[in-house]
Image 1 (cartoon, helix red, strand yellow):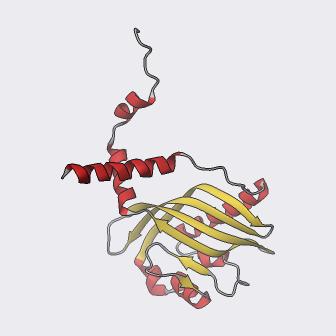
Image 2 (cartoon, helix red, strand yellow):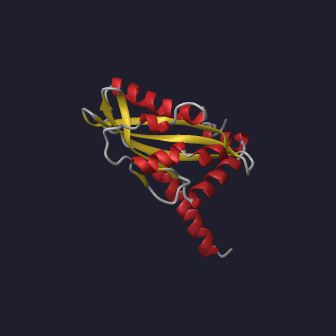
Image 3 (spheres, helix red, strand yellow):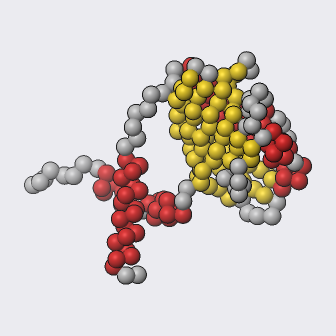
Length: 193
């Protein structure tokens, strides 16, 4: 690998690391909105795990004329009730999945209006399809939820996998041993000691 290519890769990795360093403090939601929206996100995750029970489509606002859903494995947006019903309830699609866990973390909720909230979170997804070995991946998700008589309901939902560069950087970072990391994270010994 040439020096200029190597320096370019190192520069991109450094830029990516610095961009992760400081997350601005957002105007968040009231604690009750955070708790309620987080409960809906966790309920959706439980529905993915229970393949025979209610499906996540039940958590969408039925008064929304054109709900939007972007699954990370789909080539395009799923917009409207007919397409959403197909995605969640097609017997062939459901038969292909043997097991699925969608574990949310780092859930952040921001009130947009008294009855609209924006949520962003991370997902560790594990899946087993009939034709492949078990696999896992890290995703990011965002959604807009509306407060209804039935509680908070999705009107927009999108999953976003990381770019190839971000996956490669994570892979290299995760290969460093805890002992090696500790050498740089512990306070340096004072000179002369």
